[in-house]
Image (cartoon, rainbow, N blue to C red; front, side, top):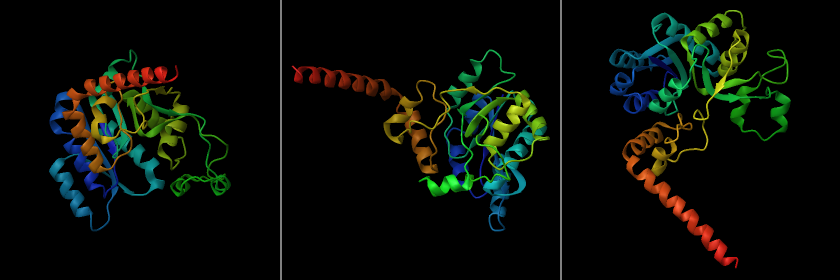
Amino acid sequence: MLLVFVASSADHFSQRKVIRETWGLKQLQQAFNYRIVFLLGKGDKDSQPQIEHEGYRYGDLVQINLTESFRNLGRKSVAGLLWSKNFCSRADFVMKMDDDILIHIPNLLKALESWTSTDSLLMCHENRMRKILRKELLDRTDLPPSYHKYEVSQNELPGQYYPPYCSGMAYVFASSVRDRLLEASLTTPIFFIEDVYLTGFCRHKAGIVIRPHSGITLRPPIKSHHQASCSFRDGRITSQEVGADELHLMWVELNTQGFFCPQLLGYANKRKQFDSTRNEISSL
């Protein structure tokens, strides 16, 4: 069994709704033997009644007693791992992901089945040799303003580079790896960048090796119209980061345009051959 816990902000009602209507459909969960829970922090006073109603209606919310903030994401993911150990111990695999990603469940399950030894499996997109962002680096480069939330002071973390770590948008691991990460977190000071903390520092301390998978990726971006079915044909597992409407469109294309994908690919190949022949003729 696969447990997917989706890191979602308390006020992301539309993102959770579209996941339940697409790749998180209850019927699909039952058919493919996976379960989804949404991991939330504390909602504000106005939204909390709506969250409680949502939890009662769907039974798939896990709410942590933490304020929703970027600096709390490390603690939030550790809490999610702990919940999965205490309340879903029968799961063979656990996946952590963000709520703006579409997951192709059949391709994910096929990738998990292909591993001969899964006891130490931590599968993801691996980030290697990533520099720790300092204020002076941010001040002298043209990085977007959104990068400033990743600023880390020397007092907070010395050194120049992070250890290799998994991209936090989606990573999947065996239940035994979850237990080793949790054990390592007990003696590893919390760090606010959750993927660096859990799959970098805690992973390194636990002696776990990252198993990169090319299908867990944000690139190339998938355009909703006419590309979804083709893009996932060769084992791709994740979409790029998308909004709720775009995720829904992508799902519709994925499930209704499968017949056309071979024809589109055939047309593209014929077009390439035609252009190549035309270029050869024009060069004569």
